[in-house]
Amino acid sequence: MRDFVAHQVIPAEDALDAGAAAAWERLRRQATTAGVWALPLPSEYGGGGLPLAEYLALAEDEGRSDHGPDALGSSALLTVRMLAAHAHPALRDGLLPDLVSGKRRAAYAMTEPGVAGSDPAGLRTRAVAAGDGWRLTGRKWFTTGAARADFVVVVVRTSDGPVREALSMLVVPTDTPGYRVVRELDVLGAGGQSEIAFDNVFVPATHLVGAVGAGSTFAGERLALGRTLRALRWIGQAQRAVEQLAARAAARPLGGGVLADRQLAQQHLFEAELAVRSARLLTVRAAELVAAELPAQIEVSMAKVAAARALGTAVDSAIQIYGAEGLTAATGLPRLLRIARAARILDGADEFHISATARRLTRRYLHDPRPSAGDPPICPSAPSEPS
Figure 1: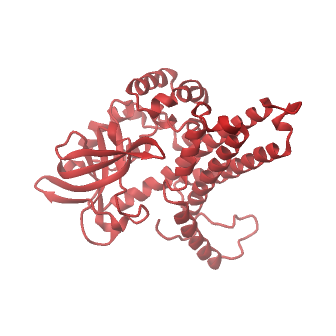
Figure 2: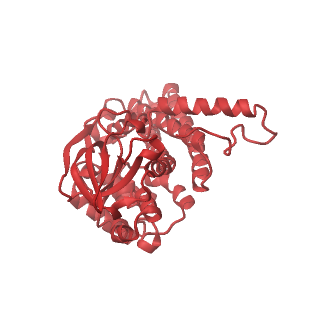
Figure 3: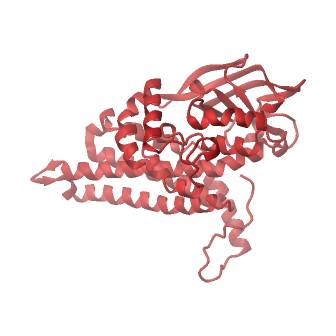
């Protein structure tokens, strides 16, 4: 996995940033030949069938490039797991083989313009029952990969009741009349995100995922694994930045020696390594709990925040050690810096995770301020509020 990312994916990052279809197709063929395509996806649909716990142990190496999961076919994991468990059999069997093989691509649309991403109660995209199906109207944005997607899984409002009963999920093929990509959104100058619209879009009843009103539950199920995967991938990119930092410091001549001889350069390396190792420990713990399907709200939130911070620290230090050259695209560091800045907002802004975790910690310590000897201070089974 690491060899493939290093020698095939990372050298293609510029082309992948530009959305070059030929580069994506070449990598899909190469990954399939190398035996690393779709490793965590179900074997009954053509995937590698790797157990979740084993895949999570590889996710950091796969994530050393932000394009790694797409290039190796595992970016569909969350959607494949959800559809395999909850989709109508006709929809499931019609979509999953092509989604796993990479012949078709999916996007997930939840966030909306003008609505705080952490407040699902504010979602306004609506679906109403219409004959033997549903009609959707509304807009979504920051929908990753929508411009290349063959279908979109959309979180919609199907009632005006409490949010936990008001949201549902529908699968919308992107060739359906009324669906359109409004515009591409740049994220600090890079594309890949889209605003999309649903103008009286009709889908058959079989395109409902699970039961009416189950959308909030399914979205919550995606979050724990999705956030953990993001954190592992950010740590992979942070480790890549640390390695670049060390190599540059060791090779840069300065005053009869090299930059690595200077204490300030040594401090940059130490602080970056400390941040990455600390975040890795937190994230591995979160991954263990998520793979075992145990409560992990505290661990996942702490891993997300720690990984985002570690990536920022490592990339910033690497750029500083490179000097002016670190600001150039040739080093790959500006790309990592853009990802690091976005990481503090993606999958819930850090402030949201800090606040929610502090509330959970307060309740936990009030409930059991003195854990038994040998027990961790935070019990995975402790009661917690909804995400």
